[in-house]
Image (cartoon, rainbow, N blue to C red):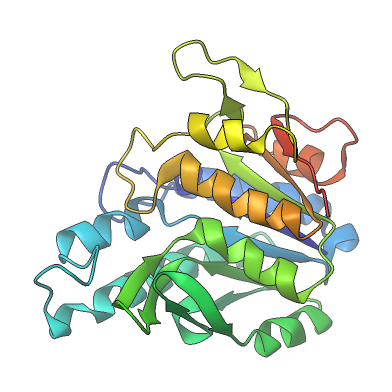
Length: 260
């Protein structure tokens, strides 16, 4: 099993509102279609929210439950995220990929922003049918906070808990984790010896982002490493990096090495 997250900065116009980049989505679909016989039944795609997942909470004042939100607006996150999932799935379908969308608000709940319950039996069945499950972050109902915006960066961890995942690949608009944004010296490996220092380095996004930017990504991938799965963060501006990230012994970007 593999899990690939395609960052919203790659496939949406992230500083706009609900603006898909259809040309880039199609490029990823073509790359996957070329390797589909190898990946059938073994791959889950997570798509970043980008201009949907970050624009909608800001527009409807539902970034946090502590805000003065309106009950009639609460559905907008899920409605617009499913619109986004549908957009991606239809382009993938046009390229011949048998995909199926899954709304994470329907299979996850949280407590204080941390996942507590999930049921991905339907996703497992779709894999058995040879389909490509596609999911994303979303609003989730929360025992402590009423609701939270649950980041797509945290979704791969669900599948690591449930399946025997060989590798998680995170495609972003940067080359990986940098020692500093100013110098852009790439950190090639994160492991049990240096991860605490890396957490102090990884920062927030320079685009609209309500879920924590690179720092949240790194925290999630360190938890995945502690569970025994290796992850790659690399630049997805060339969609072929997806395949290198999955299979290469010397993948591009930053490798977060499993240590359990």
